[in-house]
Length: 184
Ligand SMILES: CSCCC(=O)C(=O)COP(=O)(O)O
Ligand SMILES: [Zn+2]
Image (tube, rainbow, N blue to C red; front, side):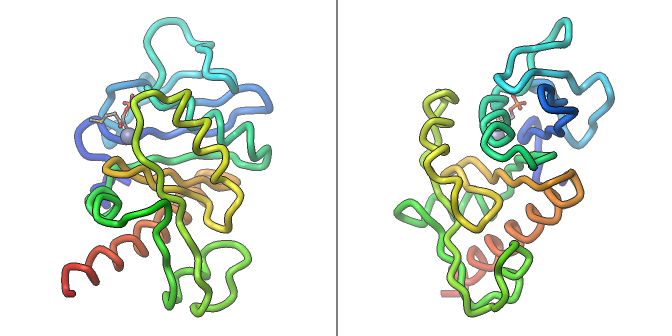
């Protein structure tokens, strides 16, 4: 994620499921491109810390919500790419429509570039409990991720490899839309 420029400064957060009740998640405020073991702590599926000292990601609630909603999800990634940040501020409404891109097939169930998939787009909110309540109603689509307006992308998968593969596909598609709008 750092190599692609998706976790600038202290932006972004990363988690993996350890077992049915615990996740490992990055601490709040760390530079995720320079992550060490000390930069990670353990919380339960409701975000309560199981590690002494320090504070888990300020967005832990959004990670926990995805793990609670999808028992087969093993990793959640969140980044702050320029494409997602800028595009989400110019797209109106509650979704970013993607169609005609071969890369759509990176998402399970998509067999043709002619498909029309909508990436959920939600207004950013500093109240993570309130935001996760709103996100909850938008998790049933074909895209394993969503975009927070002016903020960044969340993506997930059965393990860290698949979550990164999904994030790469999503970021690629958002960047295509971003570049296309620049040309237009
Ligand atoms: C300048 S980044 C602001 C917070 C944020 O959006 C983020 O992704 C990082 O927050 P964390 O608490 O996980 O470090
Ligand atoms: Zn963020």
